[in-house]
Length: 392
Image (cartoon, rainbow, N blue to C red; front, side, top):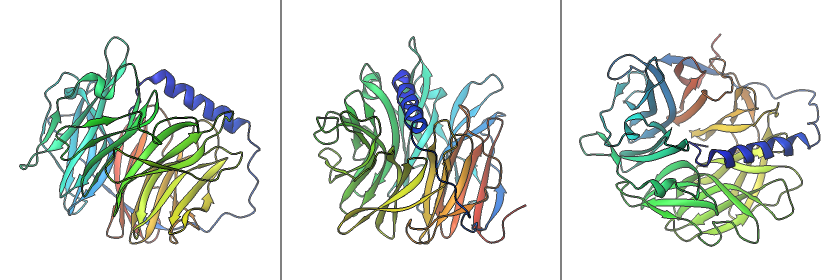
C-alpha cells in the first residue's frame, strides 16, 4: 500500500482486517487445486549505484521500450538513498542519475513509479521528524533522463490529516496519485509531475454517509482515471469493493460493488485488452472483479488466507495473461489467469518470498515476459519470467 502516513491509523486498519478475517468462517477445503502454470525464471543483476550497499526494489514499470526498477540503496548502517535503474532488454540494467534537494529526499525510498509519454515519475518516502511520520516526496524525469525531486510543503502529503500515499499512475492527460486522508480516499493530480495538487474531501471519493472510503490503486483508461479500493458501510466491520471514475482526477463517481458478509476490497487494477480487472481480498481468499459494458462483475477467486494481514503485492498483464503475486499473510505466491480473471492457476516463484516489515515484492510485464523483484529482508533479487518449464 505504499509508505504509510499516520502509522497508528494504518495499524488500526490492519488490525481490524485481522479481526474481521478471524471472525469469518474457515475456508472450505478444496479436493484439488488447479494445475500449476509453468514459468521459466532467469535472474538478472541490479548494480548498486554510487558505491556498495543493499539494493531495495519497491516498484517496477515498463515505459516506452525501457524497463525501470525503483527503490533505494541501504548502506551497512541502514541509511538509505533513492535509486532508479533502467534497462532496454530487461537483462542488463544501469543506474539512472538522481538529484535530491531535501534532507529527507536524499534518504527517500521510491515506492511507486509510473510512465507517461516515454518519461517516468515516482513517489518516495522516508520516516522521520519528531513524530516519526513518513516524509513523502515526488520525482519527475528531465529530458536528459535525470530523476529530480519535486519541492513540496510537508502538509501536501503529510500533516494532521495524513493517512497514507499509495500509488502513482500516468495517463494521456497527466499524472494521478491515490491515497487516503483522515476524510477518506484522496488523490493528487498533476499535468507534468513537476507539481501536484491535492484533491481531498471530494464528493463520492471521500467518506460520507454511505461509508468510509479507502483507495489502493489507479490506472488510466480511454475515458480517464479508474481508482479501486473499498468502502466500509455504517454498522459494518467488513469492506465492500469500490471503484471510482474521473475524467480529470478532481471530480469522481463512485461505484460500490455488491458484497456479502465477507471482507472484500480491490487492491490492484490493470487493463486487460482495455477491460479493467481489479484483484483483492475476498473473505478468506483472493478474488477478481471485471468491468464489463453492463458494469462490474465478480470474476474468479483463488488462493487462501493463512493469517496475518494478506495483500496483493503485484499485478501485471502481458499478452492477455494476468499474473498476480499475493501474500497470504505469511508468504507471497503467484497466480496466473489466461481468461481475464475467471480462472487462476498457481505459479511457482523463483525464490522464497516471506512476509515481513522489511520485505516486499514488485511486478511488471511486457512482451510476454514478467519482471519480478523479491526482497526477502536480506537481499533483493530481480527475475525475468516467461512461459516454459519452471526453474528448479
